Image 1 (cartoon, rainbow, N blue to C red):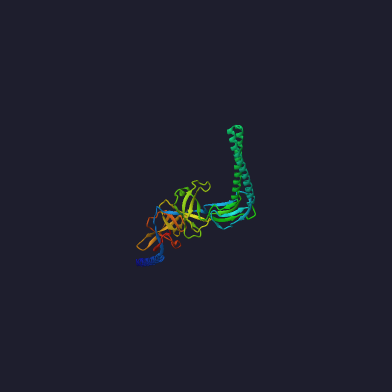
Image 2: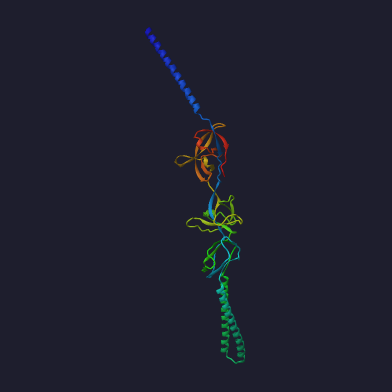
Length: 379
């Protein structure tokens, strides 16, 4: 019996010792776990944020390229053939309407005019003689000395002489026109941009010799979608961006072709530039048109979008935990319109919620953050 009690007492001591060891081990493990939890909790970082501002009437600037051109541009040549006697202008010269630009050798035409004038004078003399003869024959007819037939023949001769005189005068006038056409006159104010022949060359009828461009009246031709072109009225102001110009250029809508091009599916719109603007014909100008987006959403900077799986995009919303700290929560959004520095998106983001503005490389979903600065979306 005493042996049994001794064994029972020894077993109780062993069990008690094992229980104490277990309690000690569990306590140490719990302390280590708590220490790890405290160590794993990072310090909240400061981040830049912005406020989600929904704008159902938002619009975006679309740019349509156009070509600056002179309102009038002519390739000038002579209507008649001849040897070029003199060219008075060169490339780059500015001329006024009515200035003489070039001349043909007109000696042959002048000789022909002299001959035609002599023929006209001869025909006029014959007409005068025939008219006097007709007057005398009329007196003889009244006295009955000639027949009516004879008088009719004389009167017909007078009319024939007058017709020959008129024909000779018309031939002389035609040669004078040829003389006038031997001088090239500037049809409008402009600058000479090309010279394709020199003195002594033989000019063919209609062959371009000089090219004249009007500089004081410039226009811009732009291909626009029919819906955009329909929004302009004559006299409406438009703004164009041109490379090398900080400030946009102002122009006024004149008209559109109202015919859709089969290839580009656009209509040609013409805008008149304000005089005195430092722009040259041939430059590219981009028309800025504010186009409504047509859906409710909000703008975010490009740095605020995070790319997810399957081509989805998301923004990080700051969900408040207390008065100072927030937890980052990703929300999937749809990109509607993209610009250089900002993107118009829509998604499950309520108006007024705080969004992470930048620094996506520094954060992870669920991280605790503190707002540092409130930024605005570039406009």
